[in-house]
Amino acid sequence: MSRRYNLPIEELRFHAQALRSLKLIDYGEPPSFKGVELTELGMFITNLTTEDEPILAGDLVQTKTGVKPLGQLLKDIRKKVLQMVAEAGSGHLGASMSIVDILAILYFMKMKHDPSNPDWTERDRLILSKGHAAPALYAVLSEAGYFPEEELATLRELDSRLHGHPDTITPGVDVNTGSLGQGLSVAVGMALAAKMDKASYRIYVVLGDGELNEGQVWEAAMTAAHHGLDNIVVIVDRNQYQLTGTTEHVMTMEPVSEKWRAFGWNVMNISGHDVYAVLDALEVCEHTKGRPHVIVAKTTKGKGVSFMEGNRFSRSVPNASQLQQALEELERD
Ligand SMILES: Cc1ncc(C[n+]2csc(CCOP(=O)(O)OP(=O)(O)O)c2C)c(N)n1
Image (cartoon, protein in one colour):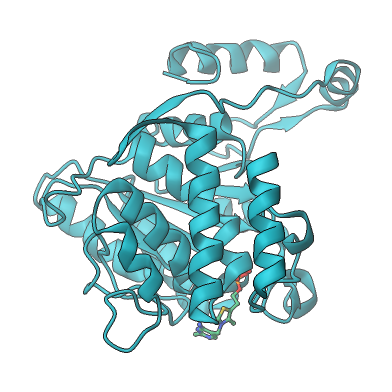
């Protein structure tokens, strides 16, 4: 079911065919499907009618401390990320804030997992290939109940289980990451194993857009398509920045979606901060067989705190007054 429209995906597919016959959208014909594009007429009509969709901030989700509105959960996670990085005195803040919504939706609304049994064989797996965003993963895992909240304050300390980059020493972490470019290759192995075992779990992989510079990503992408690994869902965190500037400045990246499509993937483009859009895209992945899936999620680095958005807090750490200001801003909005 689509959460946004409360309609079965099959019915939406039927609507898509109707929209194409009205020449409002185009998506090619099999076997050369391309991504859905608005036609000129479709664009014209969209411009006449566009209005913002309300966010599902009131939706309730289950956390270890009970039921919480989703909007509150997202704020709480962002606050924890800020506090952890400020306390540790180092960490990739912008990259972490960029993926809070995606990780929270996966762990609290989509993935099959059990914090009381992190090694449950049937669990869905998550590989944070952009491992430098570990603070976001830790905040989510602790909210879900994998380890006590107090442990967050130990980020990057010598004997802590919360390393600067994910490590399987942390309950809930499936794969060690941090050296960019490797997560999808691991996912391919896991997905092949799942197919061999006739297991139904899925492997979710979060990639950075700068990470797509790594050639190994594309080797893995080819392999996944070759084996029809429809149990892999990649989410590209398309925040358009990497450490030293815009992704386009460092290495021309566009057209990102076309690249994945050419490699044989099922491609979707959405906003990574739109809860409905993320849920719907994840739902479509479950209904599309025979190909791996990639969701190119447009996001904002540093999302949630106005003076951190963009690349300003890519690696900088907020001082005490910036932290206070950021926490107040999150509470206000
Ligand atoms: C193989 C490798 N090279 C370099 C780095 C250093 N590094 C850490 S974060 C980063 C930028 C990654 O950019 P992107 O994937 O766009 O993620 P963002 O931080 O923008 O979310 C780099 C180059 C690394 N971790 N691994």
